[in-house]
Every structure is written in structure tokens, then in C-alpha cells.
Length: 192
Image 1 (cartoon, rainbow, N blue to C red):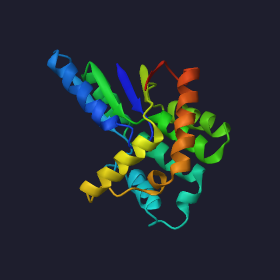
Image 2: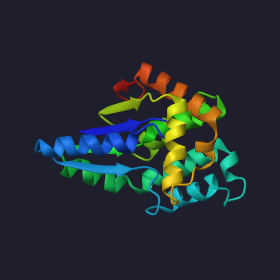
Image 3: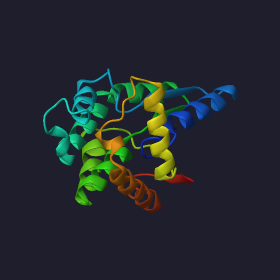
């Protein structure tokens, strides 16, 4: 079973993935965990990080270019995803394809990019569709507070351009809510 945990920056995805992983392991369920972007593991994730921190010219200004980088990041981890899903009862994903769809839609306001992300990642790149997607509906203000706090206590976690853009976080929250409501790609649970 593949479970993707989705939400805006600072929503608590990593915390929830860790808690579920521990609870399932305590029950004897074999659990694997992967996170995206896969910083340090694929060049595309590292290009995206550079772009979001202003180190790659104007690349971050293009929602389509960023969507492609995030899609290629996951494509490069396709074998790791498949191996983890095959060798464990549950694969927990800290962000997955819906993240690309939600942020890209929020940036462009164009629903066509949501369809493009789905076709590229699940179709062209052959990524497995998650069995369940969970949207963490953490309030935008609370998520922003958490992201600022995380940055203040961990110098390696400086907020990127997306994390610093409160308007984008609000639009992305609404995009996630819409994707969850329509059951985009697979079933969703919504947590408030």
C-alpha cells in the first residue's frame, strides 16, 4: 500500500509520516518512508532547491519549469519507489505527485497544469498511483509559524521562495482542498 501525505509547507507532513511509521512498525507492519523533493539524491531536486533559493537565475519564475524539475526528481526515484512498495507492507511518502499539481495550479491559476502533471508523472514517467492520499489541512498561519520556527532552530532549513510566499501557501491550501474533494488520482482523507 502506498500512502502519500500532502499539505502546504509547515503543515506537519514529516511529523505525521514519522508517527504513522512508528505506530505501524509497533504493530508488526513493515513500513518504508520516502520524501520529495529528494534533495541530495537526484540532480533535479537539487536544481529545484537552487532555483527556490535564487541560485539558478530566473528558473523559479516559471511554474512549468519547476513542475518539470519536481516531476523529473520523482522519475529518477521511480525504481526506489517501486522497490520500497514491493518490499514493504506500507510505503509512506512525505509529498508526492499531488504536491506538484497543487503548487503548480496555485502558481498559474490554470487547471491544465494539474492534468499535465498527472499525465507526465503517472503516465509518461510511470510512477505508481498512491492507494491513499492524506491532505493535512493545517491552517496557513499555523503552517507559516511552524516553517519560521523550523528555520530558526535549524540553519539547514532556510525557507525557500515558496515557503516565504504567504499568498502562494494560501492558494496551494485551496488547491489541495479542491484536489482532495474531487478524489484526484486516488482516494483522499482530509485532516483538519
